[in-house]
Image (tube, rainbow over the protein chains, first blue to last red):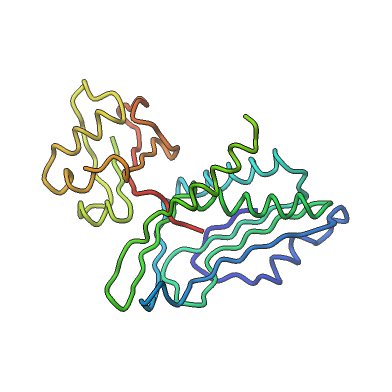
Length: 153
Length: 83
């Protein structure tokens, strides 16, 4: 299940949705991304997420399909917000449910790593020293690259 | 051909989208990028650094060699920072 929205999400509600009616689930791994209050000495007042609507849905669907091809998953949920967010606000929710914990853990990490480098979202930070586009981090590319190598293809 | 710009590239060019009709010799993403850079100083500056300009053709990530044609939607944007 994929949703891209401005509204906040309720983690408990999303978790209940995943579990409803599925008796094959043995483990659920869940990641929630949150807006930080600061980076270094700077204070972040707000963050505005921009995205490319027509492409976002397609990329997230591809990422979900890739995870399902690699691990035996009972359910996948990705909820990503856009628009103006403030420190402490939730940005993204990823849930991976499987019959066993290892697949759930690995798939959850994979989904987060891949969406950080493939889903067309951009963050504009409004900081104490002005507004600035967040730059892509090499560490995020490395994290995503790791799954390429491990796929063996 | 519909061109879209996002994030810092949109801000530098001052446009979110434009409709263009490049000359017939512009058949690839790379050639289109070069042609767009020739439009004015703002395009040249915003699209100048190939390391930070990513491209999607019809909502799929594209390489410079990829073909483009009339009717395509081509988007230019910096490396993504979601999640």
